[in-house]
Amino acid sequence: MRIGVMIGPEKGDSARKLSRMLDDIEWAETAGLDTAWIPQIPTDFDALITIALMGMKTTRIELGTAVVPLQAQHPIALARQALSAQAAAGGRLALGVGPSHHWIVQDMLGLPYTKPAAYTRDYLDVLNAGLRGPGQVDIENDTFAVHNPLDLGPVAPVPVLIAALGPVMLRIAGEQADGTILWMADERAVADHVVPKITKAAAEAGRPAPRIIAGLPVCLCSPSEVDEAKARANRILGEAEVSPNYQRLLEQGSARDIGDICVAGDERAIAAGLRRFADAGATDLSVRLLPIGDTRDELIASKRRTREMIAELAKELR
Image (cartoon, rainbow, N blue to C red; front, side, top):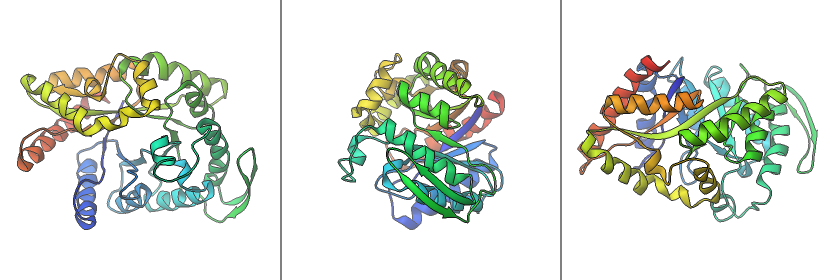
């Protein structure tokens, strides 16, 4: 199982955010982590531009988006941007995309959020063709009529991963992509819902076994602080639970909220928690470092302790 870490912008001005993210990716590569996952936050840094910059600072670690909303740009524009980032990263990009949620696409962007699964299927027809470039992209389906030349070609194949939560999206991910990126999925949801559906779809389409990237918050703390960590996870990460997509995914498992999914405790407890996801069928873990503390210095120290422990665990869990 590959172990990765989420790296994303936090509060502060743009220059400081960028410097912090570049410091974080240099640490992740030096620490020997396999992957880093860059979220596309609706109000903040562009994930693919960030990856292009990170690619110039690193040589080994895989860099993935988690995830780029499809509706925000034409598939040819996304293919062009991804191929550019792939070149900057020396072939280490993993392109995570998804149909996002109504509160982003409809409420924020003012775009229609109808039939997101069908839209994703049609979008992937164009995107996959563009990523295979260079050459003419000629795709006509229910959503797109594209006849567009591309001079760009990939310096290495670009794996495409879909944020697939429900049965239809998991089937699309298995048939047309290289795997799925998850959030709000506990071990039971991974084992009983995600793995069987996406694996079956990939096999029937004649594709390799899919990657299954499970995102989860992790906090190294004493047993007496576990409840504090779970409460903090609910407080700072729980807003996404209002999405019907995530609600349906929670129903596939045993967790009620992100606090239940949070892996918190001492080194032994965290190692056991990560192994449960591996046993459930996750091929990759995307760790969202969750610090606890009452002051900025305490939060920084907590985050550093957790990330150093994750780097050591990664060596054991491979």
